[in-house]
Length: 566
Image 1 (spheres, rainbow, N blue to C red):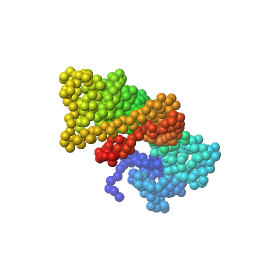
Image 2: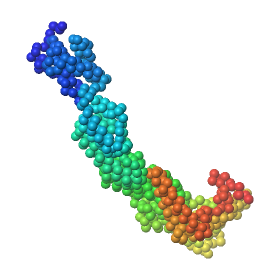
Image 3: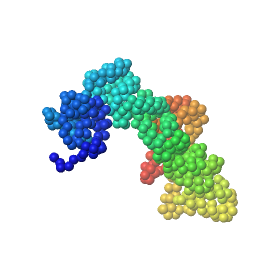
Image 4: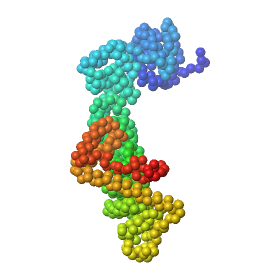
């Protein structure tokens, strides 16, 4: 026995500490007598002096047997250890080390609860098995949720699931509320009211996305995630309207993109989505003109389209420029470089772009005539610039073609033409009849190298004539078809469908089948229009005499074609 002790007056002013885990986990499930016995015993642990079980029972107005029964209950919960029953001696254990669970003290306390639960199940035409009912009672015993609060959860699940109601769904919903520290009827009622509002929001999104099923429990995680990101409901709705078709996962991807761009309000979202659609349409438009298939346009939007639109280029101007770039066999990088040069030159508005494209088209047609005279040469921007320079020297097409005739046998026709025209400009010659007899001509070749060069030029001229004829036939077929209203309408529908299909493959895969069927119908209508005109889609492709080299004499890898020496 210790040599020192608190006086009774000192002890009466002390405090008895109760662990919070006892209050949250065990106190709600125990009746009043069990709580009184536990707390008084806890108090006695801190007070020195003799105090037997009989005195404690009398003070608490209980029988000694009832006192032992209650301590046996707490022993099953691992909160105390009974070292002796006669005389009674109890050792208190820490609550945080307890592994036992509260047990039913008064089984009859669930009689009213069971009646109300059975009524809910009957209205739902559902019957739980005995072990399922036992799981529910065990949940109530082991968690601090009020019985009426649990019944409210059961009623909500029954209304939501109907005959598909399950014990697991009720318990999972109740367990989620417990984890959120919602135990009372009022707390659960407020949460379910909020849940109903979110259910309406989710159902609205389902309608916009074309989802036919009912909202599922896991889908609400998306709403919570978007709320955590700071997205307004209007912004989420705007994203769903933009998609039109899709899943919540697809919608989540788009919302993540908006969050990355710091667009969280409805106005910010709608402005961003409008720009996004405009940029994507520009990408698909340019890609179609350039003959390039684009899957996901986002990379092209960020790298190219966004810059083009910021500089003031509109869809009409970009269409004209892309058509020109297609004739030069440009891809996106080359087309972007061309726009950089035009922007530096101040060619931005629609009128200046039209004038530029018209000028380039004239130069291209002139370049084709030069090709027919001098042989195959690449359509490059530098070649067009050279023709533009000659035009700026006030040389007519007749004079330029005259220079081409004189340079036809030269190994490098364009540089030789430039030499001739620059001399004529310096001498003030503006018409073919003014050209003196001593004017430079391509010299007659005397050695083997020059003879070979002349032969090559002649052969290239021959190839150029055949290639030009094939291209002309294809262009004539295209013009004939475009003049037919039925074909033109069907062709536009096909092109729109191809763009929609490319978008759907990225943003709404579930709509691909429907769009593909629509596209197939448009293709069928276009094919029928061609049959009526006596044409096929193959007529739009130049039919070259040599399919290997396309009437150029050289294969794509630069090697000489088999037909070159025939």
